[in-house]
Length: 88
Image (cartoon, rainbow, N blue to C red; front, top):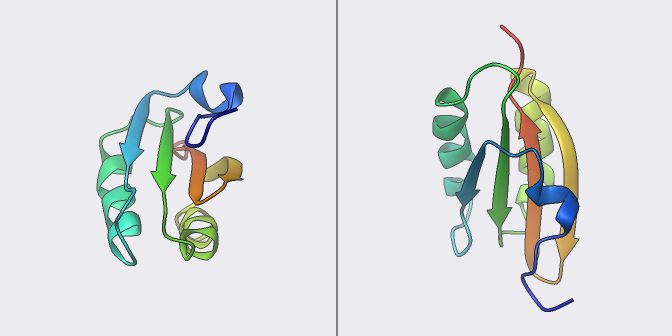
C-alpha cells in the first residue's frame, strides 16, 4: 500500500469527507465541529489529519458531544477517523 492510501474500510459508508491535513490544533477539531453540524443524525464523516494531537482530541470530542468514533487508523503520518453523528 502506498503512503496516504486510505484503507477500504474507511471509504465505505462515509457521507462526508473532511481533509485537515497540514493543519494543527485546534483547527482540525474546529473544522470537525462545523462539519458535523452539516450532517444528519446517523450520517458519517471521514476525517483526515496529520496533527498527532488528533489522536487525543478527536476521541475526546466524540465522547464529550456524544458522537460515535467508529474507526481510528494511523498510516505513517496520516491519521484517519470515521465518526457517526449522534442521534437526536
